[in-house]
Image (cartoon, rainbow, N blue to C red; front, side, top):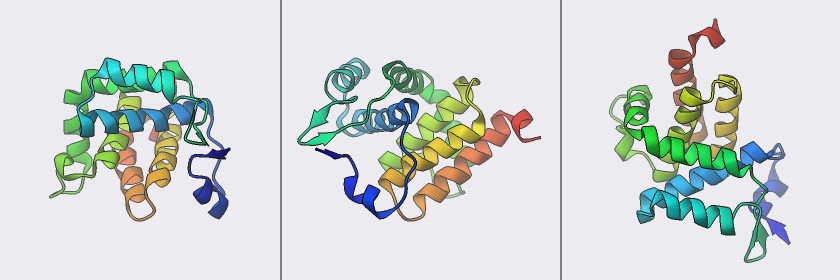
Length: 164
């Protein structure tokens, strides 16, 4: 039995994902699926909770995730996406509208921004670090730096008291 990204795990030391970290990764995957395939919120939640979170698929075991945290992120992003997208767009480098960003990257930025807005119980630096790890699970080039830069800028705007 292998874990998802087993080859990558063997190449570089990566912090083991906790249940919230696994929930964040799954939330990004669910948001991606909704964006690409047009899957409805209820359907994607049911699919992930029944068949993916902590389950084995084709010999790969998905890490155990906090299902309530997963659900909170996905439903939260969908609920306030109209508020999130302008914030992310404004934080991106000029000339790079959100709609032009890779779908996976867009899902990461939306989920991270949602947590910065809604999860005041989680320090901004933890949120940034966690989504940087999620970005590294998908990308090896400049995208993780972009995630770090955008979420850091948003965190300083949304939670200035944490950076005083």
